[in-house]
Length: 383
Picture 1 (spheres, rainbow, N blue to C red):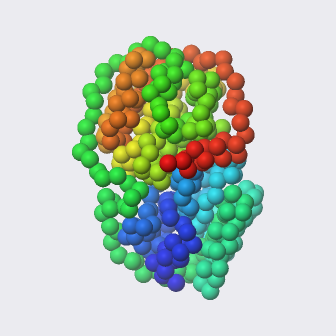
Picture 2 (cartoon, rainbow, N blue to C red; picture 1 turned 60 degrees about the horizontal axis):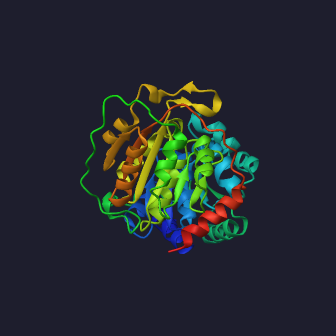
Picture 3 (spheres, one colour; picture 1 turned 45 degrees about the vertical axis):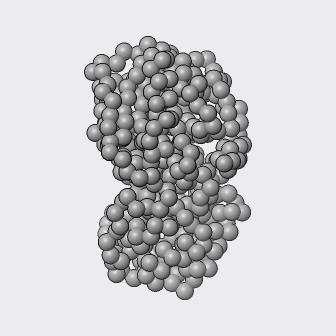
């Protein structure tokens, strides 16, 4: 079977968003997806970020597949355990099985031996692809995903696919309706020194007042809890685990629902944990994405240890990467103005909000992960 044939089968079984990190065993599949405007390929910097992108796409009504080498399965363990499995988010994991039977380079041998066991430990149903049963196995995966509301995996051993390279990829700007037209980047000038004036909760309150029905993906920790105390709404998706994934989830949702603005409430520690997403955003240029980072320069939930953002300006990183606009603000009026401007103009936008280390005395999110999933996806289904 060729990579193009497998890509076509994936499409026929309803998979319509593809993300992941390349492996040589599936280079022809990815090449075919890159050329097909109906089946967009989203290159992720890491496999756990791809799991987040897929989750956001499913929340937006898509059927995602994540392509990765089995070494990336290890990278994805926390994202799968405390995001996909905890919330119950279907995705097909198409995992290449390097090191099968110990016949590979040394770095693949141990991972090859434990790959099925990793999936068993996670409780993820899995099967091994064979040339004569690919169509049947994809049908099984689609049924299991729908029935379980959970990820399922198909292991792809060497030899199932032919190794003929399928040709050059299309230019990145032609991906179907999931990506807005590129626009010339510009950036606001930010001050050299930022002195926080308000707490994160006050900053969140100022930002929330600018919102209509825009979905907001919240980074885990006190950002969720403080936002919940300000104004809980069905359009709020609260991350209860998987630190660092909020921005990837937001990108997946923004690409799945290009007609709606998507807002991410991020934190400095969260963003630094998944900094590769900045390059993904800048590369894809989703015009409907507003990325707000509340930066208190500490890891507040664990005792206020210093964050690297104390010495590294996150807005400078976003500007260098190529966000369309970048703003850095400190006061409540500035927060409101920056968020309001971002919601009114094509992005992607990056808003850095320097805040104090003060944390409000607020309760944990009372909703279960499944309840958060269901009410958010219902809100996304509305026009």
